[in-house]
Amino acid sequence: MAFSIETVGRLWAAGRNLGNQAIGVAVGAGLATAAQQQGFLDSVDQIWKGAQMIYQGGASLYALGVVLLGPPIGWFFTYVSQRSAKTDNQAAAVHAAVADPNTMVSAETQKSIIQTTASIAQSTNLEVSKDAKVVLLDATAALPEVVGTIKVTDPELEAATASPQVKTAA
Image (cartoon, rainbow, N blue to C red):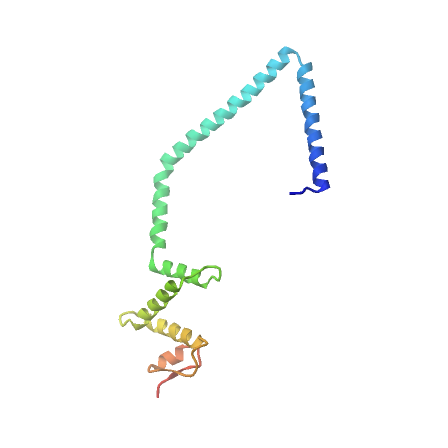
């Protein structure tokens, strides 16, 4: 990998700056008395011990938080999980995945979704089956392979569909 002249120049400048700082620290440390050097080392040691105390306190606080907040957080996630397991939420998630052009949906999944819709439309004990039939008819009429009139025996289905291809059978 080739570096540009500007990049090489910037690296050399940064290196010179760091070298100058190192020399300055070394000179300052060399000119300091033994007492000053010991004071400096004591200060650095106190900073290090303070950082360790902060870390240990944070670890203790984390452990205390896990013990106290663990059960309520677990219960909350259980509540969220059981809500997301509802059929309506799962159907909405499947619809969002299928509608997203970036989500790969296998042929088996597509077939299963269509078979599920057909099962709903053929159900006699569901109140929403008429809506499912309307969606199924509109989807069928929208296929480029379907040409001509689609005849239905229920005039309400004809009125509910958006496709002009769906007509009441005479």
